[in-house]
Length: 165
Image (cartoon, rainbow, N blue to C red; front, side, top):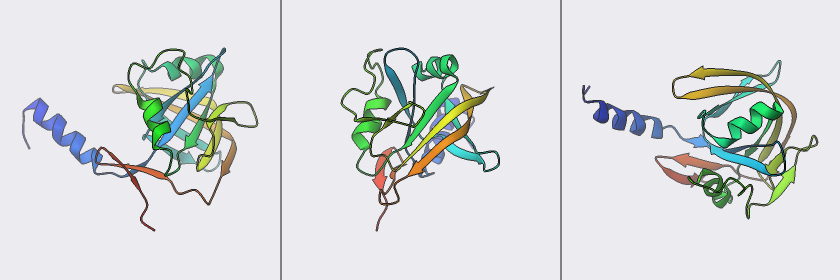
């Protein structure tokens, strides 16, 4: 293993990029405009109670929305929703960009989600745990739905992929 920090960083990123993951949008609303960000660091945590976690950079706008509202939603993107992922992943997006051209739907409790996603979760914030350069947000799932006819969007080695059928 190299002791050069930049070589290690590149190797670390390449190793993590070898882990195929689903793509999700974490969203919320506090005030007039809904906000969201693309994540691949989302996972289930517990079935009883129903908990999920997502890792977010502390400077992301969605962090302030979640902290202010104590709520967030997750849209598990479908294979044909790469444009939605790119919209919410774009750096330098205007603060009032919201969902832009991405079709918006609402969970039963009113949280904004990406319409026609493979799945939606509405969560109440349970805990925030600072770790490294991100924070782990734990949410208690209060509503969940899935469209079993929608295949997931995947991310692998810095590119979007779909399941081979």
